[in-house]
Length: 132
Image 1 (cartoon, rainbow, N blue to C red):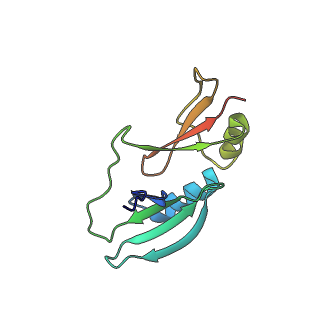
Image 2: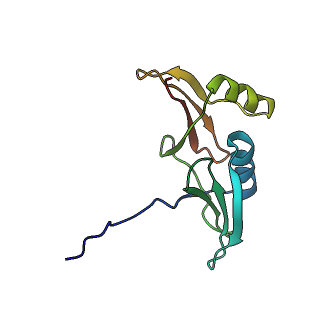
Image 3: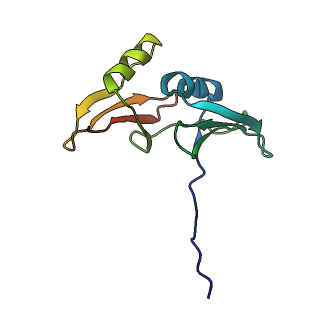
């Protein structure tokens, strides 16, 4: 009998947005992600794939064709979490680019420091400086 893993790797997470360009700009400027490819799907959706440093997984940003129901992000529905080396330095760097934290920094019981920043559509992004 042959055994196999059900899945072998997480490839990407897809997030639907109303403004693809604004969202890609945010992830590039505020988080340092890299746009790796962009195209139109067979169903007419605009797609952009973003690469995160030191990760194989990508984030797929999707904007549906005109006429689609607009995205309304529920509060605390989901979030992405990224590790940062120095949260204070990161905060200063994004502030210089016109971005602000939406919550934090907060010291966690594990010794990590966490904060949040909101992407253009209202999706929350968690930033974690791990305990040293």
